[in-house]
Image (cartoon, rainbow, N blue to C red; front, side, top):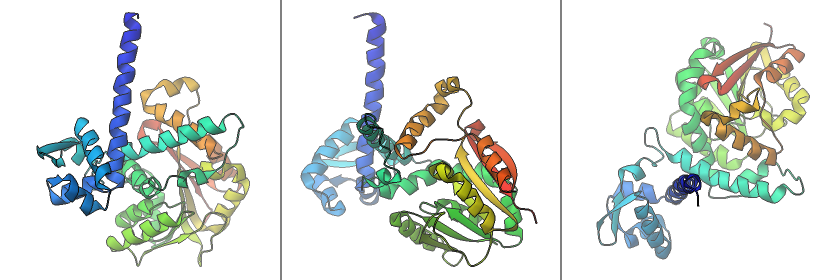
Length: 342
């Protein structure tokens, strides 16, 4: 074996161990094991199993694996506590690592589906996201922790539409709202607005409603099952948002943009947030964009593909909305707005 191949094997083994660590972390997140250890302190296998409602034999083997990967530490024989690394995966921890674990398991699922479907070319749509019952409840929190800081730190300050809507207490509608993270962040920053969030998955709507109530926003925010094809609002919207979801309905873009235009009040604005698919394939070698390349393969399974912001701006123009493009996250994402004439 050449020295070069030996080094490649070492590198792949390092990457594989990193993936295994995230797999084990996901189990700890999904089954409440990290949260229980955080709440109770050091706990035996039996106590941890009882407090989480898990099978003790499974918990014992998970503890072995989590200990091996330094996610938990042993404080006494068969007694464990969170390590600093394990604590970093707690969902409520500032800068939590939870999204990396959820994304890793979701990516493995999507890779398996892509391998299965590639010979026949089937593209079963978004239902593949609901095929793994352990992943779906964490999909919204994953997006919130991944993209919430970007919304707060860049988008809300950079895009003037939000402050304009806030000044006159307008209505904001979020199509594909997930667990409501976007509307909740918007309501915190813009205290005059009220909002409606729609999503296809009932699990997401339940989460969104519960979280809004926990934050005292239930009087200003309402969430319901629905999508761009099936929704009704009592008043024209001052802002309609689609966050990383337009590409899911791009094959129906003419109807989608017509619906956006028709439901906006005069002077209202549609705000589209999308990954900024690079103009050149060579840009995908940038480590910051490699994840986007894999995600676009996952999107193909769902019948979608990522877009260039100029494509979105063109569709706004086609329905008489004035477009503007804002690049964010060092150009990895784009927010495209379309404003209706007053």
